[in-house]
Length: 257
Image (cartoon, rainbow, N blue to C red; front, side):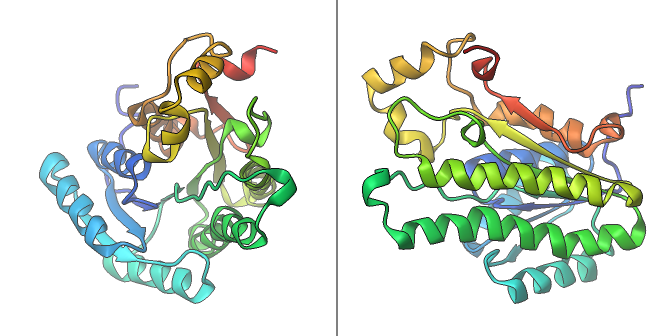
């Protein structure tokens, strides 16, 4: 029982691995013995994260550049990972964009950017790495969604972001059903407000933050570390009978009202 969360010998790819949430999930997976690839557009940050993983966990780590909105780039990433490590067992899609705009004047270019990154990027990554998992008939895919996929905010501005996360939820459920015969588990982690740079608008506004916390039973903002345990669980053998689920990491926000 003590070994069911271990990931020794597994190869994990964390897309968005240079961001705060992606980095800490990559470190968590490596801490359980996984060989980890971090990928995004910023190769300098990625190399620093890979070095940190090697230093702190003693696990193998590599950094590769990718544009997840470009199919050719994602295909190349998959080839690089297989060339380096031989296979892929775990995919974490943690890269995302969140642009808050009023619904009556939502710039089309901002809408398109969020859908390209959050929806198209998730689809392409799942598709390219899913091919590898289908061939080996096993794999774990973890998408990063949000409570905004089912719950609006009191202050608005999230029409586009919420729409993309609702789409990520349905990608997750659809792939879980389609790929179940290949023993591929597809789930999503849907956090509420997490203490990152992307949350700065709310965190720096005392009135808005107070309104938000009034609807959170645990009365606090999430920390990136809060995602690590769930990520490890969904990547490990402990979750082999769980697929198609959106796990709300929200301090109880979706449990009320």
